[in-house]
Length: 71
Image 1 (tube, rainbow, N blue to C red):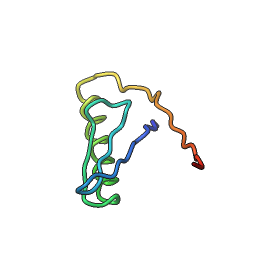
Image 2 (image 1 turned 90 degrees about the vertical axis):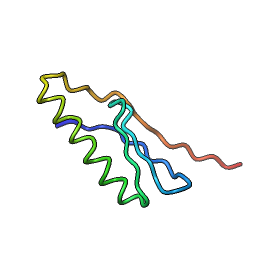
Image 3 (image 1 turned 60 degrees about the vertical axis):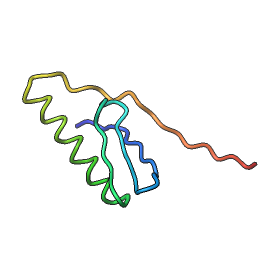
Image 4 (image 1 turned 45 degrees about the vertical axis):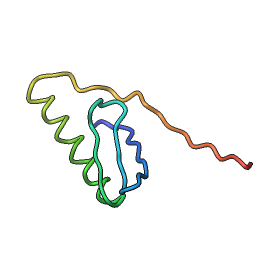
Protein backbone atom coordinates (compact mmCIF):
# COMPACT_ATOMS: atom_id res chain seq x y z
CA UNK A 1 0.00 0.00 0.00
CA UNK A 2 1.24 3.48 -0.88
CA UNK A 3 -0.02 6.87 0.19
CA UNK A 4 0.56 10.01 -1.88
CA UNK A 5 -0.10 13.61 -0.98
CA UNK A 6 -2.55 15.30 -3.34
CA UNK A 7 -2.73 19.09 -3.55
CA UNK A 8 -6.05 20.66 -4.57
CA UNK A 9 -6.30 24.20 -5.89
CA UNK A 10 -9.37 26.28 -6.68
CA UNK A 11 -9.19 27.81 -10.16
CA UNK A 12 -11.34 30.27 -12.09
CA UNK A 13 -13.11 27.40 -13.85
CA UNK A 14 -13.17 24.71 -11.14
CA UNK A 15 -10.42 22.75 -9.44
CA UNK A 16 -7.04 21.25 -10.24
CA UNK A 17 -5.04 18.63 -8.40
CA UNK A 18 -1.56 17.16 -8.51
CA UNK A 19 0.59 14.67 -6.62
CA UNK A 20 4.03 16.20 -5.85
CA UNK A 21 5.72 12.79 -5.65
CA UNK A 22 4.38 11.76 -9.06
CA UNK A 23 5.58 14.41 -11.54
CA UNK A 24 3.18 14.96 -14.41
CA UNK A 25 0.20 13.38 -12.66
CA UNK A 26 -2.46 16.08 -12.66
CA UNK A 27 -6.22 16.35 -12.95
CA UNK A 28 -8.87 19.01 -13.37
CA UNK A 29 -12.58 19.16 -12.77
CA UNK A 30 -15.50 21.52 -12.52
CA UNK A 31 -16.16 20.49 -8.89
CA UNK A 32 -13.91 19.23 -6.11
CA UNK A 33 -15.71 15.87 -6.18
CA UNK A 34 -14.95 15.50 -9.88
CA UNK A 35 -11.29 16.44 -9.51
CA UNK A 36 -10.95 14.02 -6.56
CA UNK A 37 -12.23 11.19 -8.74
CA UNK A 38 -10.06 12.29 -11.66
CA UNK A 39 -6.83 12.49 -9.64
CA UNK A 40 -7.51 9.07 -8.09
CA UNK A 41 -7.93 7.60 -11.57
CA UNK A 42 -4.82 9.44 -12.85
CA UNK A 43 -2.65 8.14 -9.99
CA UNK A 44 -3.98 4.59 -10.39
CA UNK A 45 -3.38 4.68 -14.16
CA UNK A 46 0.15 6.05 -13.67
CA UNK A 47 1.13 3.45 -11.08
CA UNK A 48 -0.32 0.59 -13.16
CA UNK A 49 1.70 1.81 -16.15
CA UNK A 50 4.91 1.94 -14.11
CA UNK A 51 4.25 -1.58 -12.83
CA UNK A 52 3.61 -2.92 -16.36
CA UNK A 53 6.89 -1.40 -17.55
CA UNK A 54 8.79 -2.74 -14.50
CA UNK A 55 9.65 0.81 -13.45
CA UNK A 56 10.21 1.48 -9.76
CA UNK A 57 7.13 2.85 -7.99
CA UNK A 58 8.19 6.13 -6.33
CA UNK A 59 8.10 6.47 -2.57
CA UNK A 60 6.11 9.28 -1.05
CA UNK A 61 8.19 12.04 0.50
CA UNK A 62 5.88 15.05 0.35
CA UNK A 63 4.24 16.27 3.52
CA UNK A 64 1.82 19.06 4.23
CA UNK A 65 0.77 21.23 7.08
CA UNK A 66 -1.75 24.01 7.47
CA UNK A 67 -1.02 27.10 9.51
CA UNK A 68 -3.68 29.49 10.73
CA UNK A 69 -2.81 33.15 11.00
CA UNK A 70 -4.77 35.94 12.59
CA UNK A 71 -3.96 39.17 10.83
